[in-house]
Image (cartoon, rainbow, N blue to C red; front, side, top):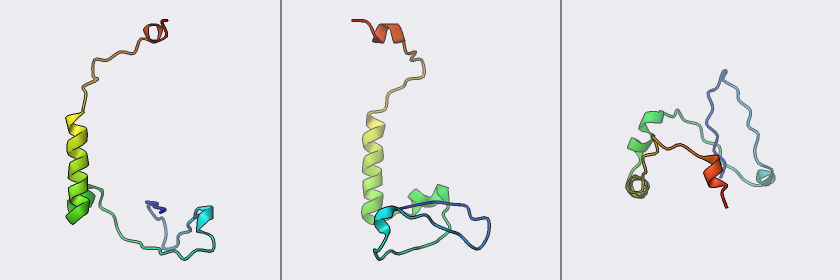
Length: 77
């Protein structure tokens, strides 16, 4: 799969496709993307998968705001 989000500057666009697409049948679809509503428009299995992934990562979130990396301590033997 190849996905590219662009902001066109004219009515004509050119796509550079991956080498492995050459000689294969491909489908090109263009539609306006609203960044804030991508998740809201998901339905069914996609929405369920997104919610599960978000819940998993939220449960494992660590607050690193006061973390300071100490290179010397990390390289001690």
